[in-house]
Structures are given as structure tokens and as C-alpha cells.
Amino acid sequence: MINAPKGTKDILPNESYKWQYIEKVARETAALFGVSEIRTPTFEHTEVFERGVGEGTDIVNKEMYTFLDKGGRSITLKPEGTAGVARAFTENGLNNSALPIKLFYLTSCFRYERPQAGRLREFHQFGTEILGSDKPDIDAETILFAKTFFDKLGIKGLSLRLNSIGCKDCRKNYEKALKEFLNKNADALCPLCRERMEKNPLRVLDCKNDECKKITSGAPVILDYICDDCAKHFEKVKKLLDLSGVEYTVDPKIVRGLDYYTRTVFEFVSDSIGAQGTVCGGGRYDGLIGELGGGDVPGIGFALGIERLLLLMQSTGTEIPCDKKADVYLAPMGEKEAEKAFELVMAMRRAGLKAETDHMGRGIKAQFKYADKIGARFVAVIGSYELDKGVVKVKNMADSTESTVAFCDLENYIKSVR
Ligand code: ATP
Ligand code: MG
Image 1: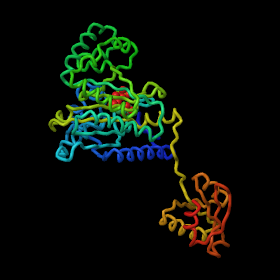
Image 2: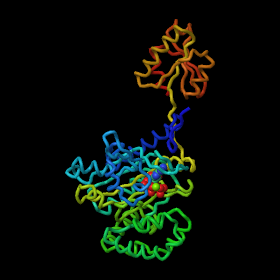
Image 3: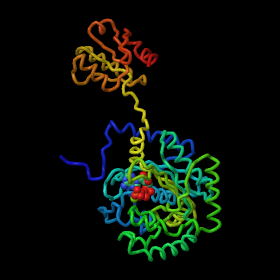
Image 4: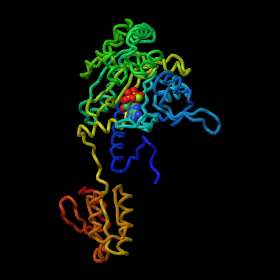
């Protein structure tokens, strides 16, 4: 037997309806916010992520699925959605369209990580990128987009944490102060953080190691280093969230792991799904499009992991509706009757009803059992008497009532009582 690669998962029918539901709610929420779908390739030239995600990040350093294709090009499976969208925006000249342009994606992502609960090698993200405006109301709107999506799903117990990491200029001062602090405490940091400290000191604040967490709890706080413009921007974001009645905590320890973030950063975090509690991460990235050669175009986005979302929904008992699978099951009692059932099933489907019949040569009792399993609302029995008279005997599976209905009336009957 061949197994699926480590860190990948089959999504079987008893799960796929949940995914479809989440995707449906994602699309509905996007439509409310005027956000259109973008689909970018599953793989890109490696450079897109090296520049777009940034060297020195965990993703680029350790997690990418990179290979040479048969033409000798370095190709990488997308580890996240933003860089590819930024590349597409630049390449297709979307900067010339009416701005801001609001995009969303639903996509597989690939990261070579140690698989555990909520951490896979192929996982799925719902994300958005809003490009062309640096106004704080777009930051608030992006956060509200995520919040509305969670609310529509009925998710409870997610807290919003908010921070500003300033612009490139304020970051320089802060990084200097942070490096000094970390240098003083270097001996107590984990080896990975000692490495991060030089290349990407902000990332140390994100370390999951308890010792590192203890040390960084005393580190200088970025909010003390941001310039007036960035501070004003942040104040406005908070004010708009207050006006919208959204609860949040300012958490100066939130930094995103990716280099291109500026100003607003945020996370939606749950404490009911263990260590991998960050369901959604986002922030502003005013430098990214420039990094990919597309000029000075500000942007903001978020990405949320669907696997983690499902874990959260499961652990908090959030209900996911499951559509009954069949409106009507045609149960024939012989070969001739089966032909009629076959014909009727297609007629029902043409009329927009979900219809099924026997394909296993089952006896009538076993057919009822099967009809029950597939969630059929009605079972229409055709025996030789019924075939003769041009009728079916319809049983309502919910209350066991029975009616006799002519073949030609079956569609209307099911529709009227459904
Ligand atoms: P973490 O700190 O948990 O590694 P991250 O900072 O790498 O997260 P992002 O790059 O911000 O995560 O990705 C956005 C979201 O995608 C995360 O909040 C999470 O829900 C999901 N995600 C990230 N990596 C994985 C993974 N390997 N498996 C499943 N979901 C993931
Ligand atoms: Mg990660």
C-alpha cells in the first residue's frame, strides 16, 4: 500500500462538505466586502518568494519546497499566498485599474515543517490582499472582513490582537535597540534565536520556546519607537475598530514572520486548539510591491489556515450544516422497474432534484437501509403493480407517511412536500 506523503491529508466526503461550507461563507463574505477572487499558479519562480517573503524568514530559510524543473529553472511551490498575488498584480498592470483593488484567494500552501496538530506540509489558506491604499480605514476594513467571516461561521472564542510595527524608518531604531537587548541576553536564547537575532531580530519575539519567551517579555517594545505618522495611523485604525464595536487587545509582541510587513499587524488567536493557536495572521506590507518591481503601492492582507479553523470549530462545537444528500430515492423491485427508476431518476435530476436509485441489485429492505444512509428524504417504491399503474409509492422518511403518486406528478409532489 502506498501512503500519502507525510504532512498531507485526504479530505474525504465526511469532511469535504465542511470545506465547501467554509469556502461558501468565505466567498459570501468577500462579495459583501467587494473583494474579488484571484487565482495564481501553484508554483512560482523561487525568486518571487525569496524577494516577496524575504530572506531570513523561516519560510525561505527552511520551509520551501524548491526544486529544479526539467528546464533547469528553480521553482517553488507556494508557501503562502501574498507574494504570488503581488507578482500577478505587478505583471498584469493591475495598478492601472481602479484602486484600491480588493482580492481574495483560497489556495493550497506548501511548507516543509514538522507535521503536528494544526501544522501540515500541504495546508489551505483563505486570504485577502487589498492593494493601492495606505489609509487606516483599509486596515480596519481588512480586520473587519476577517471578523465578519468568523462571525458568519458562528465562531466563538477568538481574540483579536493588534500591534503596529511602524515603517522601515522606525523599524531601524527599534531593531537597533532590540539587537542590543538580545545581545545582552544571547546566552539564554535558543540556538535558532541566536541565529535570528542577527538577520531578523523581530522574529525572536515570535519564538515559541519558553525560555526565549521569558527573556523577550522584558525586551523593548516597538510601539515606543514608532514615528508620529505611524502612531497616528495606528490610532485611527483603533478608533475605527472601536466605532465598529470590535474588541481587541494591543499586543506589542506581535510581529509577523515576514519581512515586508509595515505598520498594522494583527492575529486572531484561540486558546482552545493547543500550541498552534494562531488561526489568522495579517498586516500591512507597504514595501512588498516595490520589492517585486511594481513601484510604490501600499497593501494589506490576512491569511487564515482552514485546517486550524476546522480544529477550532470542532473544539468549540461550532455547527457545520450538512445538506441532506438526496431528495428522493427510487427503489425498484425488479429489472423492468429498475429501468423505469433509471428513467425517473434522470427526470428528477433534470428538474433540479437530488435523486438516486439502486446500483447494487439490492433487495427492497436493503434499499431502504441504503436510502437512509444517504439521507434520502423520500423513498419512491416501484413494484410490478406500480409499474403497471404508472405510479410510485412514496414514503416520507421523516414521519413514515406514505402516498401514491403518478410518475408524471412525482417531481411536483417532491417539490411541494420537500
Ligand atoms: P506559525 O507561527 O503557526 O508557524 P505562521 O506565522 O508561519 O504561523 P502565516 O505565515 O502567517 O503563519 O500563515 C497564516 C496562517 O496559515 C496561520 O495563522 C495558520 O492558520 C496557517 N498556517 C501556517 N502554517 C501552517 C501549517 N504548516 N499548517 C497548517 N496551517 C498553517
Ligand atoms: Mg510558520
